[in-house]
Image (cartoon, one colour):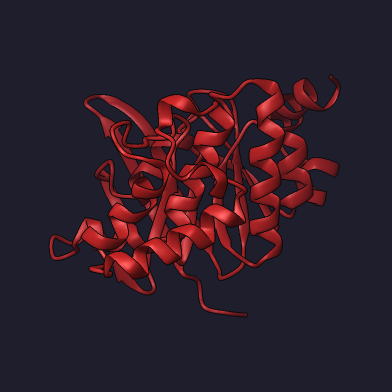
Length: 246
């Protein structure tokens, strides 16, 4: 068994008196595709935001390659270059071209030369089928195209893990497929991914592990065939019945 890249230990998060996450524990190993499912408001996105240091956990530890990244000495930008994140709202820079969007993190954070950053950006834009649009601004692109650029931008940082926060939820149904196809290819290539999604068929078919959350706690987790085929908890069965019988 390989050592986990990411270890979440007893993680809790409150906003004031509102407890959003309670005692979350799980590991992510190299090559894992872990999907987190659950109803809206179950704490899935907050968990991802804590892992990416966009929210500060109230208690618990997040270990990346054995080091606690909640420590004051950690540089968030440097850490985020290794644990990349793809957001549901794309978060592209609207005043920059597609190519510049995929270069800026490389030159600013990784201190790569413009030439190296451009070559790397082109490689990943080609990978997601967006190389014909390098001079376009985000406003000229469809939602599916923006999300593919966002994925290329994250990949250009050479991350060890990619976090996806409901990457298809802001898309029209016909654009969902093109983004999921890119994510399927990444999974096949061995990319380590942690994905919050409402796409149950994708979670069932692509994941190595599925985590079901309810009310800020992990209710059940396991291999997709076990969790989808023979869920142990009543809450899991109830949640899945709403999706799988459609």
